[in-house]
Image (cartoon, rainbow, N blue to C red; front, side):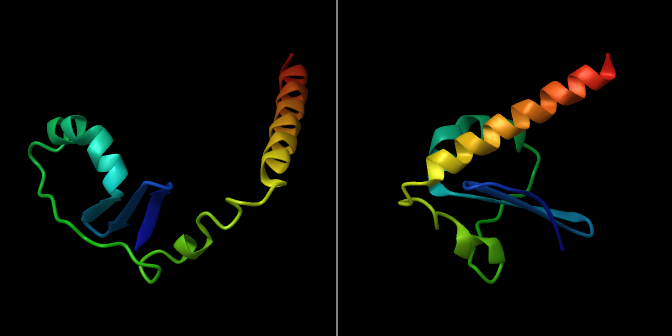
Length: 92
């Protein structure tokens, strides 16, 4: 099985000829009409997502109440901006 994309509300996996899309209830409520239009000719199956299906789930939200988390995200953002500037400069 290949994991194509992981996010908090969405997991897409691919296994041979089958693509499985697992969505949270929140995501489904917010995007129901769009999903119905895009999956008109698709076969939809409900499936509960467990930590056994996706081992990364046990780490989801682990820093939710950490007071340093926003600071770390800011540092990552600043670093990426520096790298982008260096890369842009090197291309000139």
